[in-house]
Length: 227
Image 1 (cartoon, one colour):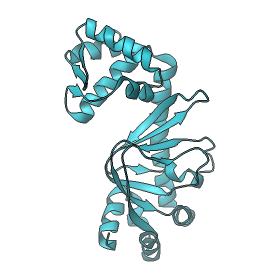
Image 2 (cartoon, rainbow, N blue to C red; image 1 turned 180 degrees about the horizontal axis):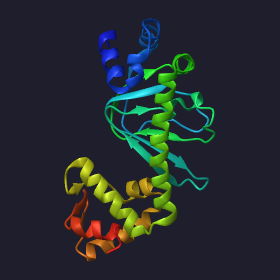
Image 3 (cartoon, rainbow, N blue to C red; image 1 turned 120 degrees about the vertical axis):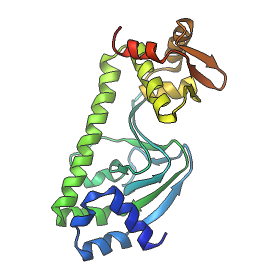
Image 4 (cartoon, rainbow, N blue to C red; image 1 turned 90 degrees about the vertical axis):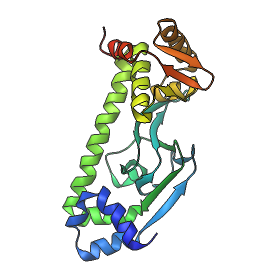
Protein backbone atom coordinates (compact mmCIF):
# COMPACT_ATOMS: atom_id res chain seq x y z
CA UNK A 1 0.00 0.00 0.00
CA UNK A 2 1.31 3.44 -0.92
CA UNK A 3 1.81 6.11 1.74
CA UNK A 4 -1.06 8.20 0.38
CA UNK A 5 -3.42 5.28 0.86
CA UNK A 6 -2.04 4.59 4.34
CA UNK A 7 -2.51 8.22 5.26
CA UNK A 8 -6.09 8.20 4.01
CA UNK A 9 -6.98 5.16 6.14
CA UNK A 10 -5.30 6.54 9.27
CA UNK A 11 -6.68 10.04 8.80
CA UNK A 12 -10.25 8.79 8.43
CA UNK A 13 -10.11 6.52 11.48
CA UNK A 14 -7.93 8.49 13.92
CA UNK A 15 -9.19 12.10 14.31
CA UNK A 16 -6.06 13.06 16.29
CA UNK A 17 -4.11 12.81 13.01
CA UNK A 18 -4.77 16.50 12.26
CA UNK A 19 -3.06 17.45 15.53
CA UNK A 20 0.21 15.66 14.71
CA UNK A 21 3.10 17.69 13.34
CA UNK A 22 4.82 16.74 10.09
CA UNK A 23 7.58 14.71 11.76
CA UNK A 24 5.06 12.79 13.85
CA UNK A 25 2.91 12.06 10.79
CA UNK A 26 5.94 10.86 8.84
CA UNK A 27 7.00 8.64 11.75
CA UNK A 28 3.53 7.15 12.03
CA UNK A 29 3.31 6.44 8.31
CA UNK A 30 6.76 4.90 8.07
CA UNK A 31 5.88 2.50 10.90
CA UNK A 32 2.52 1.41 9.49
CA UNK A 33 1.73 -1.29 6.97
CA UNK A 34 -1.19 -3.17 5.49
CA UNK A 35 -1.76 -6.70 6.80
CA UNK A 36 -4.18 -9.50 6.06
CA UNK A 37 -5.63 -12.25 8.23
CA UNK A 38 -7.73 -15.28 7.33
CA UNK A 39 -11.14 -15.94 8.84
CA UNK A 40 -11.22 -17.56 12.30
CA UNK A 41 -7.58 -16.72 12.98
CA UNK A 42 -6.49 -15.74 16.50
CA UNK A 43 -4.34 -12.65 16.14
CA UNK A 44 -3.89 -11.96 19.85
CA UNK A 45 -4.06 -14.41 22.73
CA UNK A 46 -3.09 -14.95 26.34
CA UNK A 47 0.52 -13.96 27.00
CA UNK A 48 1.09 -12.80 23.42
CA UNK A 49 3.21 -9.75 22.72
CA UNK A 50 1.41 -6.64 21.54
CA UNK A 51 0.45 -6.96 17.90
CA UNK A 52 0.07 -3.23 17.34
CA UNK A 53 -2.80 -0.85 16.75
CA UNK A 54 -5.15 -2.16 14.06
CA UNK A 55 -7.37 -0.08 11.78
CA UNK A 56 -9.84 -2.37 10.04
CA UNK A 57 -10.25 -1.75 6.32
CA UNK A 58 -12.41 -4.78 5.55
CA UNK A 59 -13.79 -7.62 7.64
CA UNK A 60 -14.82 -8.22 11.25
CA UNK A 61 -12.98 -8.95 14.52
CA UNK A 62 -14.23 -10.38 17.79
CA UNK A 63 -12.69 -9.52 21.16
CA UNK A 64 -13.39 -12.03 23.91
CA UNK A 65 -12.26 -13.42 27.26
CA UNK A 66 -11.76 -17.08 28.15
CA UNK A 67 -12.65 -18.62 31.50
CA UNK A 68 -10.56 -21.29 33.24
CA UNK A 69 -13.16 -23.83 32.12
CA UNK A 70 -12.69 -22.78 28.50
CA UNK A 71 -15.93 -20.84 28.13
CA UNK A 72 -15.76 -17.78 25.88
CA UNK A 73 -17.49 -14.47 26.54
CA UNK A 74 -17.57 -11.99 23.67
CA UNK A 75 -16.80 -8.48 24.88
CA UNK A 76 -17.42 -6.63 21.62
CA UNK A 77 -16.97 -6.81 17.87
CA UNK A 78 -15.22 -4.49 15.44
CA UNK A 79 -15.76 -3.88 11.74
CA UNK A 80 -14.70 -1.62 8.87
CA UNK A 81 -13.34 1.73 10.04
CA UNK A 82 -12.98 0.67 13.68
CA UNK A 83 -9.69 0.92 15.55
CA UNK A 84 -8.55 -1.97 17.75
CA UNK A 85 -6.55 -0.65 20.69
CA UNK A 86 -6.47 -3.84 22.78
CA UNK A 87 -4.31 -5.51 20.12
CA UNK A 88 -1.69 -3.11 21.52
CA UNK A 89 -2.88 -3.32 25.13
CA UNK A 90 0.68 -2.97 26.46
CA UNK A 91 0.49 0.76 25.70
CA UNK A 92 -2.21 1.01 28.39
CA UNK A 93 -0.64 0.44 31.80
CA UNK A 94 -4.05 0.00 33.45
CA UNK A 95 -4.91 -3.05 31.29
CA UNK A 96 -3.82 -6.07 33.33
CA UNK A 97 -6.11 -8.79 31.99
CA UNK A 98 -5.77 -11.03 28.94
CA UNK A 99 -8.10 -10.72 25.99
CA UNK A 100 -8.27 -12.72 22.81
CA UNK A 101 -8.83 -11.20 19.38
CA UNK A 102 -10.12 -13.40 16.58
CA UNK A 103 -11.09 -12.70 12.98
CA UNK A 104 -14.69 -13.56 12.10
CA UNK A 105 -14.06 -13.10 8.38
CA UNK A 106 -11.06 -12.45 6.19
CA UNK A 107 -9.64 -9.16 7.45
CA UNK A 108 -7.55 -6.46 5.81
CA UNK A 109 -6.16 -3.85 8.17
CA UNK A 110 -3.52 -1.21 8.69
CA UNK A 111 -1.13 -2.20 11.47
CA UNK A 112 0.69 0.54 13.41
CA UNK A 113 3.81 -0.44 15.34
CA UNK A 114 3.20 -0.51 19.09
CA UNK A 115 6.41 1.23 20.18
CA UNK A 116 5.91 4.00 17.63
CA UNK A 117 2.31 4.59 18.63
CA UNK A 118 3.21 4.58 22.34
CA UNK A 119 6.00 7.11 21.78
CA UNK A 120 3.70 9.42 19.82
CA UNK A 121 1.09 9.17 22.59
CA UNK A 122 3.70 10.45 25.04
CA UNK A 123 4.51 13.36 22.72
CA UNK A 124 1.00 14.34 21.66
CA UNK A 125 -1.84 14.87 24.12
CA UNK A 126 -4.47 14.74 21.36
CA UNK A 127 -3.43 11.25 20.39
CA UNK A 128 -3.31 10.19 24.02
CA UNK A 129 -6.80 11.59 24.61
CA UNK A 130 -8.08 9.79 21.52
CA UNK A 131 -6.76 6.44 22.78
CA UNK A 132 -8.43 6.87 26.16
CA UNK A 133 -11.67 7.98 24.50
CA UNK A 134 -11.73 4.79 22.39
CA UNK A 135 -10.81 2.70 25.43
CA UNK A 136 -13.69 4.24 27.41
CA UNK A 137 -16.13 3.46 24.60
CA UNK A 138 -14.95 -0.16 24.49
CA UNK A 139 -15.22 -0.39 28.27
CA UNK A 140 -18.88 0.58 27.89
CA UNK A 141 -19.27 -2.33 25.45
CA UNK A 142 -17.58 -4.66 27.94
CA UNK A 143 -19.90 -3.56 30.74
CA UNK A 144 -22.92 -4.24 28.51
CA UNK A 145 -21.60 -7.72 27.78
CA UNK A 146 -21.02 -8.39 31.49
CA UNK A 147 -24.49 -7.08 32.34
CA UNK A 148 -26.01 -9.61 29.97
CA UNK A 149 -23.96 -12.52 31.35
CA UNK A 150 -24.48 -11.68 35.02
CA UNK A 151 -27.98 -10.26 35.22
CA UNK A 152 -30.04 -11.19 32.15
CA UNK A 153 -32.06 -14.34 31.64
CA UNK A 154 -31.08 -16.69 28.83
CA UNK A 155 -34.10 -15.86 26.68
CA UNK A 156 -33.16 -12.17 26.70
CA UNK A 157 -29.53 -12.88 25.89
CA UNK A 158 -30.39 -15.08 22.92
CA UNK A 159 -33.00 -12.57 21.74
CA UNK A 160 -30.47 -9.72 21.88
CA UNK A 161 -27.96 -11.76 19.91
CA UNK A 162 -30.49 -12.67 17.20
CA UNK A 163 -31.68 -9.08 16.77
CA UNK A 164 -28.12 -7.76 16.66
CA UNK A 165 -27.17 -10.33 14.02
CA UNK A 166 -30.28 -9.58 12.00
CA UNK A 167 -29.40 -5.88 11.98
CA UNK A 168 -25.75 -6.58 11.13
CA UNK A 169 -26.57 -8.88 8.24
CA UNK A 170 -29.69 -6.94 7.19
CA UNK A 171 -31.48 -10.26 6.82
CA UNK A 172 -33.98 -12.27 8.84
CA UNK A 173 -32.06 -15.43 7.91
CA UNK A 174 -28.96 -15.80 10.08
CA UNK A 175 -26.33 -18.33 9.10
CA UNK A 176 -24.94 -19.38 12.46
CA UNK A 177 -24.51 -22.53 14.53
CA UNK A 178 -25.80 -23.02 18.06
CA UNK A 179 -22.20 -23.45 19.22
CA UNK A 180 -21.24 -20.07 17.77
CA UNK A 181 -24.13 -18.37 19.55
CA UNK A 182 -23.01 -19.99 22.81
CA UNK A 183 -19.48 -18.62 22.30
CA UNK A 184 -20.81 -15.12 21.78
CA UNK A 185 -23.11 -14.99 24.79
CA UNK A 186 -20.93 -16.98 27.20
CA UNK A 187 -23.13 -20.05 27.57
CA UNK A 188 -23.18 -23.73 26.63
CA UNK A 189 -24.34 -25.07 23.28
CA UNK A 190 -26.94 -27.33 24.91
CA UNK A 191 -28.51 -24.38 26.74
CA UNK A 192 -28.68 -22.31 23.54
CA UNK A 193 -30.22 -25.22 21.63
CA UNK A 194 -32.95 -25.65 24.25
CA UNK A 195 -33.74 -21.94 24.15
CA UNK A 196 -33.90 -21.87 20.35
CA UNK A 197 -36.23 -24.87 20.34
CA UNK A 198 -38.45 -22.98 22.77
CA UNK A 199 -38.37 -19.94 20.45
CA UNK A 200 -39.36 -22.21 17.55
CA UNK A 201 -42.25 -23.67 19.52
CA UNK A 202 -43.45 -20.13 20.26
CA UNK A 203 -43.31 -19.21 16.57
CA UNK A 204 -40.45 -16.74 16.99
CA UNK A 205 -37.90 -18.54 14.78
CA UNK A 206 -37.58 -21.44 12.39
CA UNK A 207 -34.52 -23.66 12.80
CA UNK A 208 -32.86 -24.93 9.64
CA UNK A 209 -29.67 -26.85 9.02
CA UNK A 210 -28.13 -23.73 7.47
CA UNK A 211 -29.10 -21.35 10.26
CA UNK A 212 -32.01 -19.55 11.90
CA UNK A 213 -34.93 -17.73 10.27
CA UNK A 214 -36.48 -15.01 12.42
CA UNK A 215 -40.23 -15.11 11.88
CA UNK A 216 -41.40 -12.77 14.66
CA UNK A 217 -39.09 -9.81 15.20
CA UNK A 218 -41.56 -8.03 17.48
CA UNK A 219 -41.73 -11.01 19.84
CA UNK A 220 -37.94 -10.89 20.23
CA UNK A 221 -38.19 -7.18 21.11
CA UNK A 222 -40.92 -7.95 23.62
CA UNK A 223 -38.74 -10.59 25.28
CA UNK A 224 -35.90 -8.10 25.64
CA UNK A 225 -38.26 -5.51 27.13
CA UNK A 226 -39.77 -8.04 29.54
CA UNK A 227 -43.21 -8.10 27.96
